[in-house]
Image 1 (spheres, rainbow, N blue to C red):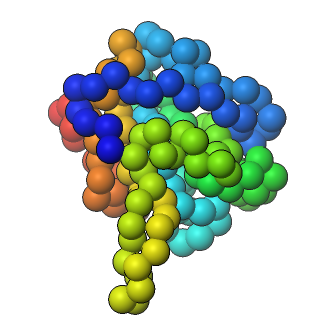
Image 2: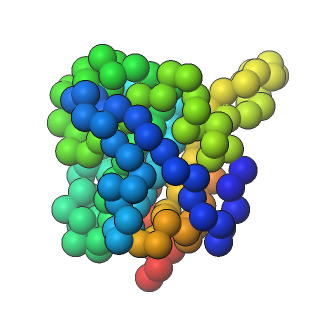
Length: 151
């Protein structure tokens, strides 16, 4: 897992529109890089819609929002269009970005242990340093979690 104060690992991927997204595109901007398990599932939909509903506020505060999940571009496109999401969702089916940020690991559901994506949000400053990490994401109030870090 990446730690607060460390340089954020560089990332590269393709979003729901086939656009190439590279971490270097965001130098000089504050980035909310959020990792979520699966498109169009209840918790992930709540989180994405909370960020969508507060998108203008987050932009005014200087943040760029980027979502990452193991789903492919086609799944991201469908999810993004269904919920009118205004930010890029990077497809990471090979888990390279997810694992480089330490957002993949052991999970436990109904007493069964398995490996999966650990919902985590990284706040990366203008210089590419991890300023904050949100490990206990409140899917329906995620914007306030982000904003309250620097209130």
